Image (cartoon, rainbow, N blue to C red; front, side):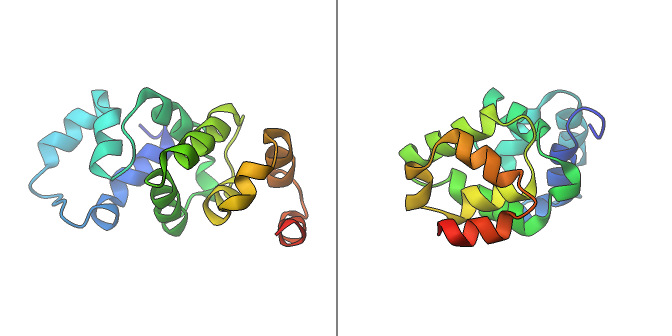
Length: 138
C-alpha cells in the first residue's frame, strides 16, 4: 500500500480521526483484506467518495504535503454541492501531482473556483509565491 498509494495508507493510519465510530481492534481482518483489494472501501469508511476516480486522485497526492487537517478540508469539499464536487474532482483528476497548495486552493475557495480556469489553478498551485498570489486573487 505504501508503494502504490501512500495517501490511502495515511488514511488507514488516521481512520479513527476521520471516522470516530471506526474501531481498529474490531476490524483487523477487514483492514488486511482492504489493503490488498478494497481501496474503494477504505475511502468509503473514511467518508470520502468511493469511486475508481477518487482512487486515482489519491494516488497523485504528494505524501509529504498530506496532513490530517488538509484531509478533513478535502473531505468536506467532496461532500459539498454536486456542481462544486464535479469541478473539484475534475481539477484533481487532471492534476499531474496534487500538492498542498492545490488542496488548499480547492478547499478554501468557493466562488473563486468557478471563475478561474484549470490552467490558472495549476499555475497558481505550483508557484513559489502561492500565498501572495492567492491573497491577491482573493
